[in-house]
Length: 335
Image (cartoon, rainbow, N blue to C red):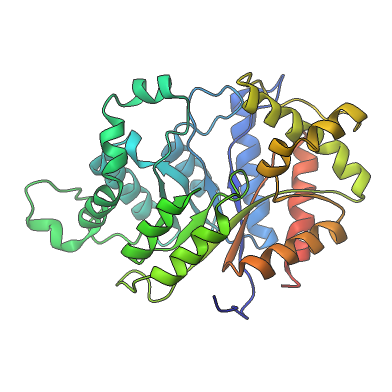
């Protein structure tokens, strides 16, 4: 991997997390407010993740929410982080994102993954034949590329609203399988190290070593995802992070609940954070003051040499979340 000496782009991965005693409408309003302020803070992209049947996450109709965010902002790139392609028809995805790309020219990204974004029962309800589509993931990416190409105008099946529209495709992944796909297709690659860091370095090495230049991308481009909870002091950030800890406990025990307000960090929660399963999953969760988060981010960027860093956060109070993203944008000016 070669170091990129240009300013490091930094972006946001938004799940539209729903807090207890908060409405879906308020959650969407907060997402838009964050995107508008992130645009002023210098963030490069604002991506939305697809999840289903999770009451704590409201980004299930991902393409609709992308349109809402793009319509309320002016220049920040807006996209999917990602669309879980086996849940959808490549034709419909092409029509949706072709429409978005025409409405908001040169601002829409299409990140594609193949995880279900939900439990298996719900995944079956979304698309009963999705497992066949999982194995066809590389072919279905090619189908979308074909629908977006002007050469498709003579085909029997067309996504006319997509033909010739500039919507870059990104391959998303949390394992080495996705690295092979991104490399072989010559597409940019985003790794979900914010919750699945185990295969990060192996996946990056595969991607860099096997990358094949394409008409879409001449050289490898990587995005690494992290969690960030930044505040004025380490202690304050630690208290705010109790929301994330309790949310992850719910995910790991199958008892998913609305995002809960923070509490004072205590012995029980410290022990929970020190649990090996938690430590593995949250290896790249950077919690602390500006100085603390900057040190951890610097180490992450130095070790991974990713081209771009993307930040997720599960912070209960909207004001705390805005402040955390503001602190992160300030520290990224030094990279």
